[in-house]
Length: 219
Image 1 (tube, rainbow, N blue to C red):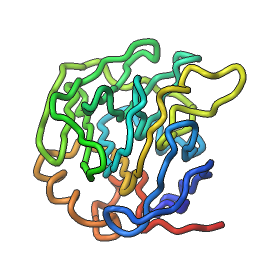
Image 2: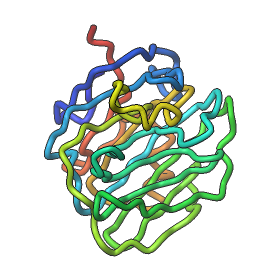
Image 3: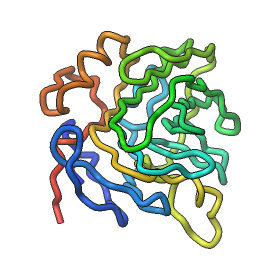
Image 4: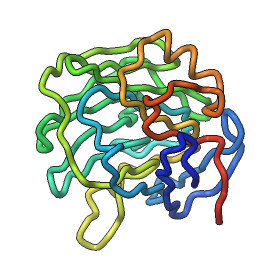
């Protein structure tokens, strides 16, 4: 998958397939290990302000978390940030220590078989999550973002190995597209303005750390 931000954060896909997305192509995940892995890069090791957003079309739920986009590893206590759905709600995590998991627990339901836009922001003081461009929940977290060298994972909870099975029931089932990572905390209006257009039409020089959805199959 090719990064559309121009920063060269191309990635390796594992199992998922190309389907029609909210805007153009997107990726469908099976909820059992399909995922996109993006190798560690300092540009994605965001320690200040942050936004992660995506369009999702869930087709089923795992009983635990349903990981959308994250830099988060439980087994080694290198938790950084994570956008996920838990019991049909948008949960947004930003850890300041790696071994804790402060989170804004959304209240607005995410429906199956329907496109929903989810976003999480952090401005250095508060976590905020948004569902379809509407502010849902905010949480005080003034302690910053933990730094780590783990990969970014989309649609999954990290590589599944015999020694690493803690995420086996935390993968996403359905379609994910228009994923964007920003090194700034977008406001509600910025999220609303950007969510209804493709990544190709978004212009914020120096702030789009990684995006994709003028998605190209490079295989």
